[in-house]
Length: 324
Ligand code: PLP
Image 1: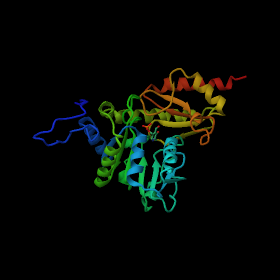
Image 2 (image 1 turned 90 degrees about the vertical axis):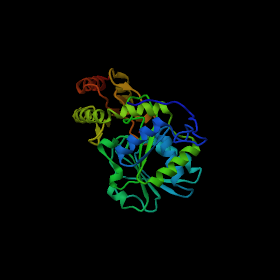
Image 3 (image 1 turned 180 degrees about the vertical axis):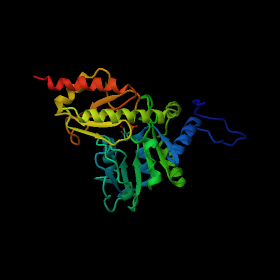
């Protein structure tokens, strides 16, 4: 059974610190979660305060001023926001099409499987053949559908806030390293910067992991069916779905149409984020207008009945044809 230990200190024994002594270094709930995450992805896992905290840690631990990151274009926009922030500290990043070969000269390839919200899958073979180190943000695929370390990646990153925790109530990130010495370096940096995860979110993550496989299998079945039905709907122009997981996106004609769908939903929540048991949808142009079409709607499929979800989408999309 999972339990949560909220202590920030543990007594020394015979004046010697034991495995746990101060929470910023490590705590029992986090270590238990890391054991489970390491098993799922086949490597050495470390928890962070968020997915973005995890990304910050990788950049600071393994790159130096003047180094270049090749980032998958169309990947989670917050990752490019982070790298732009780090440009002031001498990091450079370029974007590339992750379905093809990565650019020469990059020190770290940053892929996303599948990308959010464009749902492309990276060419992992081409990435593994590149001399740079490889990180796969596998938030939307989860270890149920993809284990990137088995395909030559050096690091897997998850916003555990999403599918791994799974209930929209815990903010967490994880990096799983292939090499033990990389995990040791990351642990050191995490301690020095104080961006680890607290015990309570780690506890919620452990509880969420117990149902991960059941949840994402069901979400995949429902998303596959909804993608099919959306593809046949006259008000829908494009559907993007990678065939795994619960994340998809589709386009309606423009910003006004997207807003009308958002405000017409009755079951699906109009909110950001993804990976929870309840379905959420939003127009992404409010956050990343320069990168996405104005009518792009991102849907994170939850565990509601597929028919109930379709009924909701269908009645919202029907409003588009009834417009004056
Ligand atoms: N990576 C992906 C693919 C995401 O979708 C997100 C958040 O939406 C993140 C990373 C950042 O995670 P967090 O919000 O936990 O910092």
